[in-house]
Amino acid sequence: MDNLTRRTFLGVTSLAGAGILAARAADTPAPAASAPAAPPVADLPPVADVFPTQSPELAREMVGVSHGNVVRVKDLLKLHPTLANANWDWGFGDWESAIGAASHVGNREIAELLLASGARPTIFSATMLGQLAVVKAFVEASPGIQGTAGPHSITLLSHAKAGGEKAKPVLEYLTAVGGADPARGDVELPPELAERYSGTYSFGTRDADRIEITIDKGNLRFSRKGMSPRNLVHRGEHAFSPVGAPQVRVRFSVAESAVPELAVYDPDVVLRAKRI
Image 1 (cartoon, helix red, strand yellow):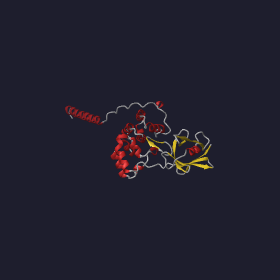
Image 2 (cartoon, rainbow, N blue to C red; image 1 turned 135 degrees about the vertical axis):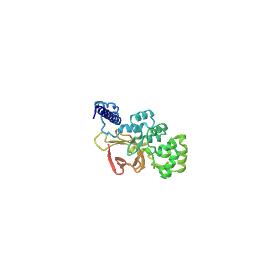
Image 3 (cartoon, rainbow, N blue to C red; image 1 turned 180 degrees about the vertical axis):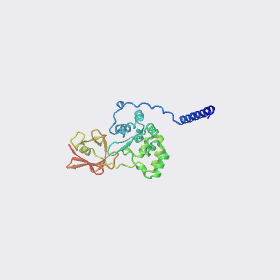
Image 4 (cartoon, rainbow, N blue to C red; image 1 turned 45 degrees about the vertical axis):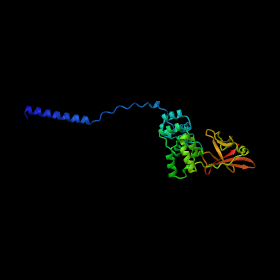
């Protein structure tokens, strides 16, 4: 190979090599932008024992404030948007959701805010908001569903009344269909009988192992330290149901006009407490 041919060959080879390198460079992804540095572990709050379940305290607060505190609802949604679907058991299985709370008190602003944040709509929210087509679809798909009680045994018809003028067409529809305001089956409780049941009942040695039966506006109330008090609905024969839990029974034993004990059935006996 003479010098001219050799120089030409090397030049072509160099150009080819440069082309291959350029192609490879084009196929190589650009380095990713550096992610923001994570905060040091020492700066993070301690991990709760319930993690990854959300805080029960926050769930309870969310349901509570959804009855009427729109400012706090917004604060909690900023903290955890999924709290829009928070639920809480106030006692004996009386479960209430945040949207359920807003619905039974007729708080349209909070209900619409929760729905916009991902809360699951229900027949109760649709009723309060006056969504007639939705309510009709529920009833037509499941005849008799209008008799299902909401939180605290509040009827569907009551939700329609809470919705005010905008829910008037739903109120008229439910009234015409019937069955949306079933009676709870209360039995009148004479004041002297209520007094007989009131007192403190113990089922253990701790301060928390006490049941307080008190009278509030003529009705009995069941309370345990640190828990939400529950109103009791008289069913007759010394038996009561907590509001929102019609299948549960609180039965008082009576002997010679004295009431020495109470028992809770759900549906079998789950607690017996002796009167102090």
